[in-house]
Length: 317
Picture 1 (cartoon, rainbow, N blue to C red):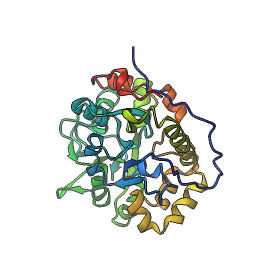
Picture 2: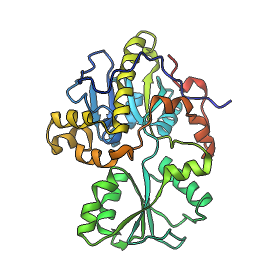
Picture 3: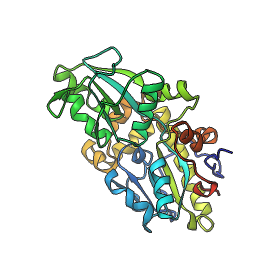
Picture 4: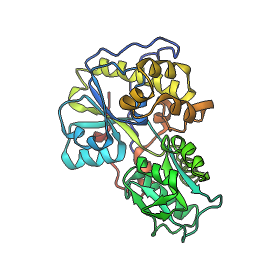
């Protein structure tokens, strides 16, 4: 039987309009810069929270510094299994922010098109390949790769990769929106052709591409259960605010400082967050508690032809 991500025992949600309160419990956590850190937009002066470059994250599930680690869900599960780590997946918080973009092209690519994607053989690439094959009839054997979505930025701005003209890019938000103006100034037309989350839904019936998740240290669950519940309750309120583009998000991020300072703490400044989340677009792909109640990580893995995980890999409290 496919196992579902365990839902949390939560108290009533705080009102979205309430003023910011720094969580002063004992939960210590770390998150990669970008959308996962935006989920903590009002915790900027909380010394229990560390936001850092994604390249520094792999070691955190093997260390002893944090009670919770925000990391790519599938890569995290693989790491826990490989290293027998004291963590379990408690919640998925982002679920699809990938976009196929044409560079001076408005038609769909063919198998001879020059395409650049990112994170080869990881979730973005596996989803892209399956959708490309099963939905678009596209051969992806000639696709070139960069390491992360951030490395698609210069391709969007110049239309080139390694001095070669590129026709299409698989990119992600907020990288896409953050580089549209620079592309336009350079005479490049960027056209969003496909939203991969929509394509995945049409292909599999699943509403979410499993991305960033929150891993909780199993050994602290029993004696920190109340603090964890409070921490997740506050997180739920933030996610709802982000999805609805509640102005409180901008109020809090702007209180921290200017765009440069925000970039350092979150990896993204509020003006870009506002653009990608406006009118309920939720282009950063945040996922709510209610979404998680319908989400099966193992069903997602099965759709990708990957191994599934036993109950012990999912947090229960």
